[in-house]
Length: 362
Image (cartoon, rainbow, N blue to C red; front, side, top):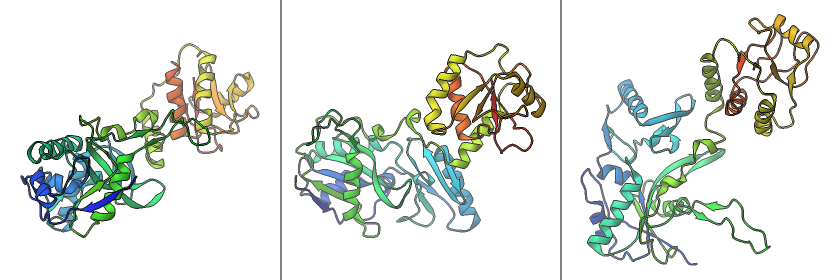
């Protein structure tokens, strides 16, 4: 495969209502069938009127930006100082919901396109129907990445090609069957286009030539397939946010544990489901020793005498367990696994002098 990455200069300033297909076709009359058009989301947002008026500076500007951010946020993922990592209503996890103040008048903010996949489909259709060129379209924006410094462009919307190339089931040159490999090729192409577009060069569109022999006849499933399902997200919250979520969940629990003893097999299944995730190598113990339970009732205010206790680590002397389940994301995950098995649980405070943690009454 031989790839070319070609800039599309001369598009100029884009305003609300501008015909983006006409601007691109006039600037790049050399477009060919099978090209991949890589378009910065900002010019899509501008043409679609995704702009908000704000004060030019001062605390009023900050307040207005906070209001806009709240409106664009579906879920707060993490907060550190002035930085807000959020999930947008599209499902993207990014800083400040992708709100941008660069390459725009100081009194305006640019929001992400309302539906980037729909924007990509509309642009592709306009170029095909009016200019008789069949290309794939990728709408891109810049994101940071967990655990790595620096930014890169990724795909927000796509039409005319699949977002992911699935290698599962293929066999590598050593005879190994690939089990998990799914490449986000549209993100790779977005990053390739950014090498040409840059941030200050006023080149918002690039063309990648040679990757496709021809676009899909239909538009495909779009970039929505890149959004990871919440049930598969092992890092859905920052540490502080996960702890706060655990505390909030605890505050809404009933005042007493189950009136009937839980199914111990169900408890053990829940423990097995999370043992390797919560604390690899940690021993989980169902405390049934009457002396230990009696000590818990004495040491922990509100501990019900009839409760079965679930603790992490080894039970200690009758005064209670030496270690308890640490309260926060881990306990929240364990409680979720118990709930899936139909076992209700009640977190209780530790005995005096014990580590800052909590245990579960079942």
